[in-house]
Length: 258
Image 1 (cartoon, rainbow, N blue to C red):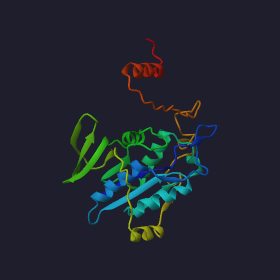
Image 2 (tube, one colour):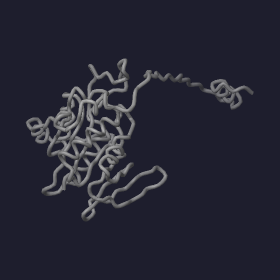
Image 3 (tube, rainbow, N blue to C red):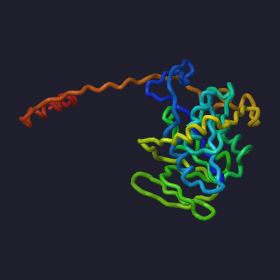
Image 4 (cartoon, rainbow, N blue to C red):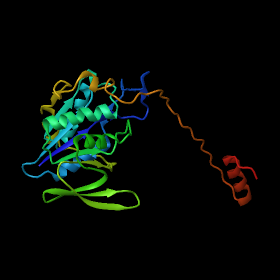
């Protein structure tokens, strides 16, 4: 079987600024593999049997290669970097279109396409669904577990107040919902091996995409304005033995009049 995992490199910080066009300014900000994408990758690696293949792909600037190195350290067999100056400023639609072009041209016969639920920088959670729609295949969100089941798969979907198990046909798109807070650690052998592995680099021409179908020019959404919210919380600790006095303090904090 062939498992395709779409990943993304994201800023390793909550203090990310934006430029005048509303795009993330990544200069001087350390980057990591998106945690949800890492879960998707480890799910694919965990299902891999003899003769199977796990392929990681990302769209991003040249430095996104480090995220793919991380994928190979964790067990990916091949890696593809979709990079082109024209990809800059892509919204979810333009991003999905580039990924769809890659899937259809280079791995249309894959048995399963895995995504993380969302990225921690954009948090839209829309790319898996848009890619599935473009490919004309079924999609499964909020997946917490994937098990190989004959010629297909069985997944568990966690909706918070209910858990659903269902069959997933080959060629479907799934979106992994969970994150391992402890992360994953490759062996020294895996780390050294990944350093020398080839990463295939593809631009928009290799994907068969025109200049006005990718990046900012190919995006259907436009950012009107972007502001940074700096939440503040006042912490106050008091020791009160009289319940009536405590009630008065709480009402004062909440701005409630008697």
